[in-house]
Image (cartoon, rainbow, N blue to C red; front, side, top):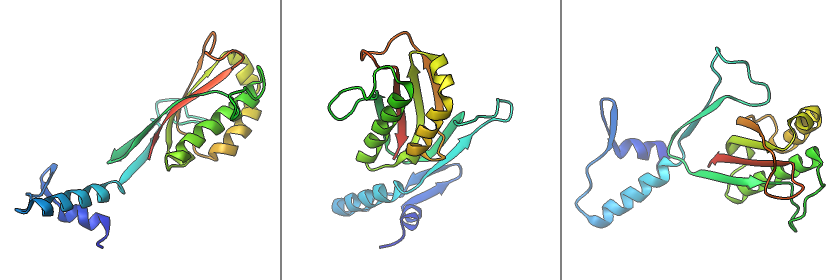
Length: 178
């Protein structure tokens, strides 16, 4: 089988700024096969670029934006709290323990979908006590690196009055590009 990039080039025609599919072959079954091969080849080409404009404050532990291009699959990650496998919070009102488990749960969803932590491009963190989060930043950073390594997606931290689950102090949701 040809390399996927060769398949893309052989199935596209460059019309200046736009790229359009080549005309369909006369045989319906041939067209179906070509379209399926083209779809399979396109999914290999997703470029991700970190976007940190110089006029913004230099990010530390996150990125301002991540741009993706190409054909990709988006995985929207529902909010995760610090639950164990039985639906119990790992520790009542413990920011670090709940953060670590919530992030572990989120990464587990990505892995189940066929990805890895590096596929996460956006995280939203909801905490009930910003001061507690900031005072535990060193330990939270260690828990973060344990599950995410040195991968820093675009992130937002929001302080909220309460979370849906009683005793939960942090909830993390996100977006992954697979």
